[in-house]
Image (cartoon, rainbow, N blue to C red; front, side):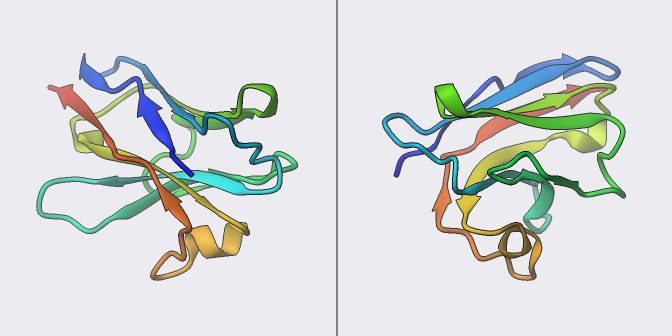
Length: 124
């Protein structure tokens, strides 16, 4: 299964970006999809996840209230809308897929598929 991210880039603090993760040719309506990020010199960090029926979970400390995860089953695509971006949001963002949301949020996460990553840079 190939997960293809897009939508990263450079934005000023306070701005917005929307990341997309497509799984061409695959129906993932029965999978949990999510996003992780990794900043330079830091560990992989869970950002958000969404279940097949629309249940959501966020890394409350870091992004809740600013980021929104959503999915379009017809397009096999998951989105991460990021608002009020801060310089500390700068990282490579990775799309991930697994069966259940607890696998997404466990330590370490138990992920079946990863995307290649997309860079998000927030300037101050």
